[in-house]
Image (cartoon, rainbow, N blue to C red; front, side, top):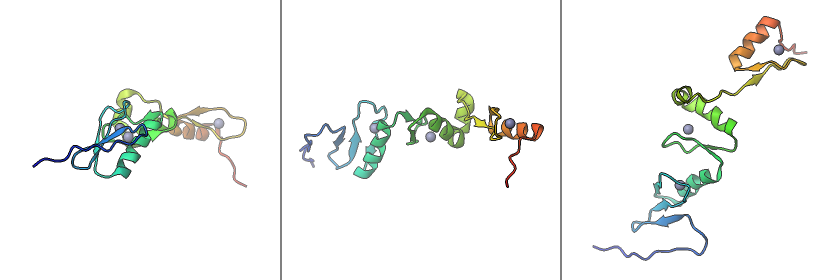
Length: 123
Ligand SMILES: [Zn+2]
Ligand SMILES: [Zn+2]
Ligand SMILES: [Zn+2]
């Protein structure tokens, strides 16, 4: 049996195509994986990632962050093995003691605070 190859292409510059079985393929030139979606809302969700400047490089992960630090934070919390391998910079935390500009990894800051007594007293 033959499916009709009637293609419904809208005048808008659409970055997707529909298959004969009614599924949606992302055809965005930026898209390397060209995934197929059964529902259009999933396609839309996926395509939103193309509009975000920072995309998660892990295959199958749809995360996209507005800034590099958002992506780095995501990488460390969701893909720690990858992050360690690729030396993804960890987000730096600042000592919140007034006048102190010490910054570093979270645990280093905690140790710094213990060492120099930079714990903020809560009133
Ligand atoms: Zn895509
Ligand atoms: Zn990810
Ligand atoms: Zn400090």
